[in-house]
Length: 201
Length: 243
Image (cartoon, rainbow over all chains, first blue to last red; front, side, top):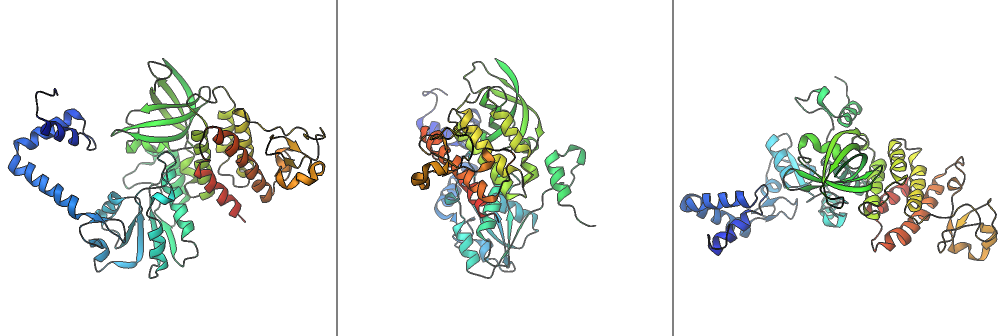
């Protein structure tokens, strides 16, 4: 877009929108125009919501989740099993587990995984607070729900080692055939992992 | 320009929404990078785990351009096989991190590094074999990159038996008995690095890791003004803790 065809405010709006995942400059122009045409019904409510989010939402000091309250709603919720802590890589993973509704314990968000290529070391992760939580007592089992990747499982083993001898059982999610998965279409590694994890029926 | 080759995946980082920039050690062309369109899709992501082997084709306008990889199915999916084995997983992370940190684009072209790395990775599930192989691989890596140690004869006497130490200054083997007053300043040379049939004890692995680690840090990574990758430090920490 030429500098003359739009004012600096619109250009700034487009530039900021284009930084969002999945949006390039062309899509950002479409989104900006879409918002501008719906000033009262969408643009202003969105701006208010963003401002409020920027002001009020922060990381939970206990688990690392995002929320407006400290500790977060999940940490405060009654009816959850305090003795079970599920460790996840990031907030979307926590949301995914909550969507499923299969887990009724507490969470701990690491904020990433160890990664050589991205230069993420243990110091960059929310690991010390997990160790502190475990040392404080009252936790029976730590479930490492990290991705089945080299980085994810390297992190899982690293965390498991740190928790060794601290009186908690450390488990991880199963690896294998997904629901609806056809053996013929699975990669060799997943099939091998599924075979290793077989159990009686 | 285009070429096809076999490659060992050293790492992959996301590029845009669906793409990946893949880092590989190829058989003929050394370390190379390229963009894989759609590489971060759920269906394809598993084959791009570090340590897997793939057949790939590279296309680019110039040899020095980033270019694009078209990757056929992974020929060996090693990463998924060792997800439950922390030591093997740590070894894969260390091997790929050392290659990424120690090689620049195009380095190690035409060397035997690809074959040596394939051999090591193929044994990564065999816990009793790979630690000694790993130490030999690091020694081979130093040699392939021009920092090889001279373990054929004693630097002091010229004798080619009874070699027990290596000089950290010269990288040459020494008979401990010939350098008694300096022996505490020398690095221990485990027998299995000199005699391929020698029995390998855990202390030999520790000595071997200390030896290769010293020269990796001083010669390879020191020369590049980089630190030794933390993945290697974690692997060594884990191996030294083994019973």
